[in-house]
Length: 402
Image (cartoon, rainbow, N blue to C red; front, side, top):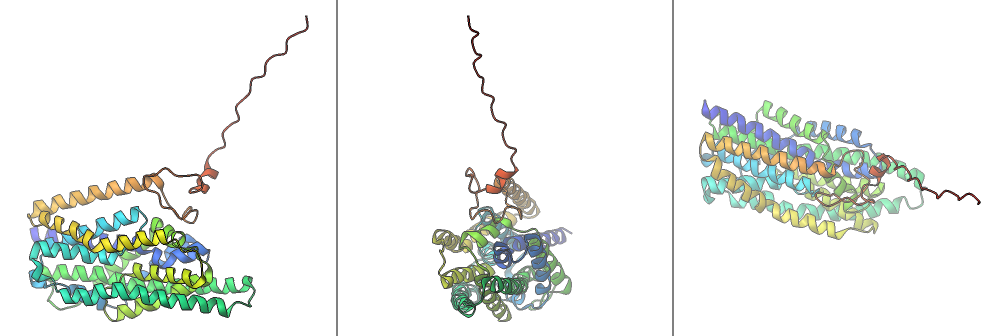
């Protein structure tokens, strides 16, 4: 009974991670179309949510890599997986708070690796699989997508250089909506499978499923719905960074970067690579900016790369510390859940200090956390404030003539 409680708890936490993955990565597909006005914000997240659900049901290759390739599943326990998920969730929420499009996939891998090393030993980690399926794609895929976006953007502008902008912009808006939809579908195909793999790993560790088997039907459906609901919630803080913070996106480059992103992600998911869709999308956006000759905010790009480099070790450190607590039995598991809930609430209330929604997501390229908002940053909010009444000036009374 106690083991069943822990298994159910870990499955619920895995679906919560899937939810955070959805709103953390929704910007990968829809930041560009929202920034250019190709799709309205609410319509964009609804479309992305539906396509994430569909994409999650198309393939299970990545899920099999996680459930049977990264670790020696005979040494993995359910509390260890819980600890890894806690590390991934907290890293996702922290980077979301600061508007940093870090990798949810690498947060999950880092959290699990840290928890497994602490809970089961270094020998339980298949190092070569992690290098070949996680680390190498993390380096190669953004470069491939960026180079493809550079040439696709140049080609798009070259083909339409004699076409009146009123016609070309309309056509590219339709093209951008299509490529963004393909990215959302690809995101579900890639990232939706990661939670399937984690839940399958939980069932194998609890001897509720045979080792080496793929995800069950209910796991596929639940994971697809969780990432779809998360995508619908928006993730507007990262949406602002991706759509306005890196480079000002025009419709031709938005369509080109979306095509490069979707092609790279779909090919990698077919090969079973644990790819970061965030890395690929960011590489494509940077490439499209270079291809157009636009001003790229390299300071923002450097912050993002710094967050990427910290994701695996950072989430791994949190996952390792969580594993020390989760291995203390049911009491440790409950204590870890309480700490997770408390940390989530703190991050949520801090985010309310400078709230970003679909109504103001395109008003600025800045994502503020604790700093005071400047008037240019939230120009739209000034319109909502009631104008102050002018002060009455007292005039001296005229003296009567003697």
